[in-house]
Image 1: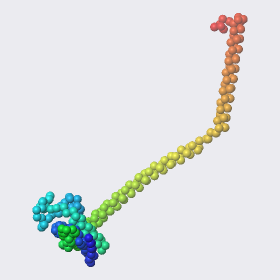
Image 2 (image 1 turned 180 degrees about the vertical axis):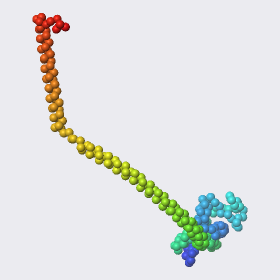
Image 3 (image 1 turned 180 degrees about the horizontal axis):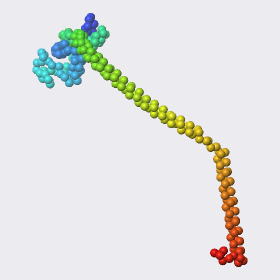
Image 4 (image 1 turned 30 degrees about the vertical axis):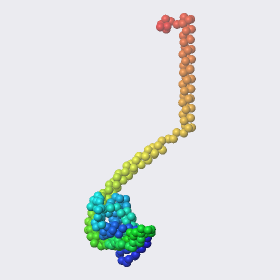
Length: 265
């Protein structure tokens, strides 16, 4: 099986496959259905045919052919679909090599021609089915759409610029108000901090003015208090001794009978 690809000039690309083992009638039906379609649609359709998810509608060569869902007559030509899929992919590769946009390619020419029918070997020799298929894809221009989109974009950009100017003015006013509020808050906090600092300084000065009590001073005070307690204890002892002496004398006088009755009372 020979394969041949051609590279055209301009905004289109060509591809051709010769002497492939498919029916020419099936190739004509597939070509009729995919002609003037985009390459993305064609690839998706052929992939669904390979999985038997979608059938190829047969309009001309449909004698004694059963219907399929969504159409009168159709089939799932898997072998032919695979060949056409390879043809479309090779044409897209040629377009990409030329620098065309592969996402905006359209099939402008798709043909299936009958090839030679060489006889097979053996006693009962029969001709084999062979076909030539050819494709031409073209890049679709998007100038009109671009002009319309540019006009829409320019008008929308003007509206957006006006909106952005209004938003910027409102944002400036809001920023000024927020800045003044921030300065007021900081000023109030600064006044509070100044008052707190003054109070702290005054308390520190008072603490510094107060006499510092050292360990030696504490010892002296403790010694003084101990001496005073000793003196008090000595005085208490003396008083107790004197009172005890007086009591003893009183008892002796009572025994001797020198005290009077009035004195006893």
